[in-house]
Image (cartoon, rainbow, N blue to C red; front, top):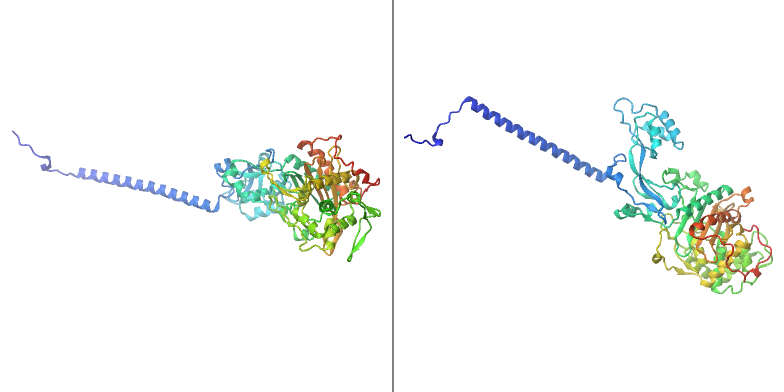
Amino acid sequence: MNAMVHPSTVPITVTAGSRGLANVRQRSLLVAKLRTLWVLGLFLLVGLLAFLRIVYLGLTGPSPREVSLNDLLTPQRGEIVDRNGAPLARDFRVYSLWFNPKAMTEGSPLIHSPAEIAAGLARIFPDIDQAEIIAKLKAGKPGYLRKSLLPEEANRVHELGEPALEFPLETTRYYPQGSLAAHVLGYVDSYGHGKVGMEEYYDKELASPEGRAKPSVISIDFRVQSALEDELAKGIELSNAKGAAGVILDVDTGEVLALASLPSFDPNHVKPNDMVVTPEEAKMGEVPRGFNRATNQVYELGSTFKPITVAAAIDAGVITDLSRRWSAKPFKMGRFTIKDMHSMGATLNVEETLIHSSNVVTAQIADELGGVKLKKTMENLGMNARPSIELPARGMPIWPSGVWPRLRTMTVSYGHGLAVTPLHLAEAYAALVNGGIWRPATLRKLSPSEVPQGRRVFSAATSARIRQLLRMIVLYGTGRKGDAPGFRIGGKTGSAEKPGVGGYRHHALISTFASAFPMDRPRYVVIAMMDEPQGTAATSYQRTAAWNAAPVVARVVPRIGPLLGIMPDETRDIDISDLKNLVPQETSEDPE
């Protein structure tokens, strides 16, 4: 029987072949480890580069041409809509025209000369500045040449055959109504920040997740806004005015349904001179298109203040009998003579004073009222502070501080010596006709529970009397060209000289018609202001408000009334039977 041998005791014979096999295995294992390390290192490097890129973008933000799919699909800013849901501002995907000097890897960055490219672009975009395009191309730096191209425009640029002209598809801010309500909306700059209007005021809100999720509703009705801008533009054309402004305000809530300043600008294509004028233009009194005449510029608004003075005097008990007659003869106050544009007879009652727009009688009424009470009324109407509307551009009134002396009281009573914005005037007239309650103007659409209580400035009885008087001015006085059949408009004209170096500029007027309708149940205030209208054939060579601002209202109201649920009705009107016997047969054609 053979003895068993333990394997561990068996000698192992190592040959040259077995040693070679072991070396091969070791080398293979080493190569595998090295490859693993290389792959791992590559992944770490890619991860590090991605992390650094994320950090870089987080600090600097993507370039205009590096817009992700997520950026294109997700709005960067919330939509702005009018009170009826019509879009006024929204994010939109559009082509842009981008100059890429590195598009060609060899030779010149351009196939054509800069001048040839600029000429070709001018054929597609007639409004471009060819010299500016040439300068950008010669500089050799990448950048935008134009934003918001239509697809057909991009195709035409492509046909120019220039590889350096590219068309990135980007998310941009788009204003579907063009220049409509531009001063209300504002615009968004190249950094994505809101400027000038509601875009600036609600910048953070519109960019927030909540703001992007649902539209921001404002009080503007784009149909009413369109009618106001259209008629103001027509007024500028007919009177050859430098500019115009207008406001349409709900008298019971303070909601602004339309607010316009002309000339305007296109927020889709904002140009540098839209916001800034040259020093030479500034010396000539020019203002940029982006300047808001309705809320930011203050003016002496002339005789539109006279109904305010009369209302304050009625409330204070200075006027208890409308038939009382006052001397209409010019009189001196210190070094100054207070007079009317032409003789209105020896005496006038209150109705005649407003119908003919007498400075002389209004000044006497204010003198009896006193500076303390008139100043308090103006303060209660908000005329000593910036308008409270949700816009960055809000002008500070030129407000006489301290105790008003007699002369100051008299001049303020007929609209001189106190400068306010047209929006201030709209708020004041709302209080005159709505029962006596002043409320701040707002660009937010309000629910019934959000309407502010306001503050009482005039008694309800005084407001009712002023409604009669404003209607009489339109029926018999300076506001007759502001009437529209069936809409029962009431209002007051005002023409005031603009101040300048060394005094007032006698040939530069601010002409305003402040109105409301329908006067038997006022719903809306309509303000139309013309900046430096000229006497033309269309205005019978007159520059006053009766001939240029009042007709704007007469054209606007029939357009907006039916849109707002107010149909013309010539069978009804405010009852003025108790005042008709106080009106003379002869009425004024052109005092204002």
